Image (cartoon, rainbow, N blue to C red; front, side, top):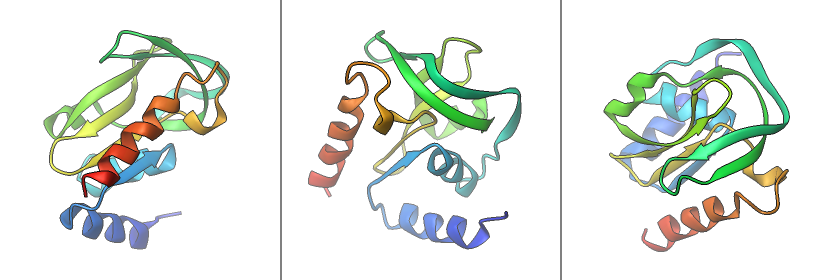
Length: 131
């Protein structure tokens, strides 16, 4: 599955500064669209008990995950890393510097913890309101 058409469309949206919120594959496609290809994890992240640290608040959130790839550390060139997986320190969330875009690798919509990730959706709404 190459997803080249989708990547092309994402590039256009980035160029137009359209607010976006990437979740899981969307997180990965946003990275790829900006020239930062993903890499395969030695062990994929699967399940609903993955601790992720919010680097902005230092809070630890329990997340649901289902992925085998991760965005590279070099994404720091164009994004602020906002979340890290506490099992292997991989990147779990970013806020892009060049466009109104946030993305997370985990699934905040599944809420395995007590509404720990709802703030992410509120942050996206703020991006939309500023558009």
